[in-house]
Length: 312
Image (cartoon, rainbow, N blue to C red; front, side):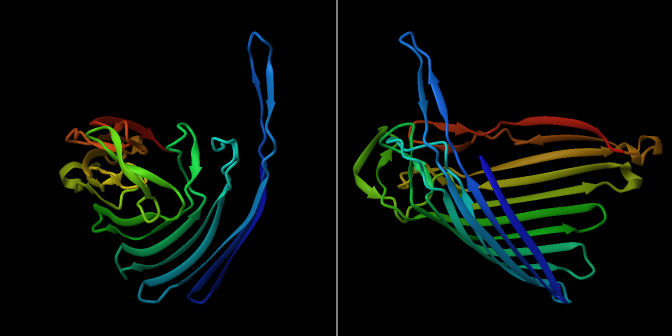
């Protein structure tokens, strides 16, 4: 059961905009479980797990006349982690966070081009990780710190050519924890050495580098009216498989292509009717999205799909 109240206000004065908001949450969880057996039904009632928190955010942005807009924001977060317990049956504290972000947005005057750049730092407390000793349970991993930057470009280079590109760098590590673990050797399938502190280690499954670019081109009307092509590339960096950086899952690059046709360009009667064909992972690349100590998960192979839509 969850309920809350929130408020938000936006203030604008000349070229300055300020956003302020707050939220109060109340959460409670309990359960009743019936286990059926020949010896008789066993009813277990869980104790209520109430949690509450006040979170808020604030941001400011200034727009210069020549198209540049610097901004800064600060926010706090609260995510209940009820419904699951550690191996002793104890409920977990809520996941709480604090985020700082600063960046620049630049709209090129007279052009349909938007460039953005931002840097961020996020601290989250009571981050849950797998309990390596008690299989099937989670444990409190302590504080996790995520910091990095992002850059992106969204440009209509011409009437018919559109390009979107972005790059992000994320360094996510266990900043404050009392957890330890042995490193794992994938060749022998066993742990080795003494227990290593997880403090300062990278969080598993989080790629440090990601890059993507997408371009869409609609052919000139005198060549093929209403027909367009697109192309994309996605890069995902390597990730660690456990909390003590035993080994990495390799990075990978995927290519996508597609085509679209607007029937309304050929006949006014068909206005709103569009067809699209897309192929993801064009080269049918064999890649691994994530690994644990006992298994790996394969990525989606080549996929061909299409759709026909009508809007009015």
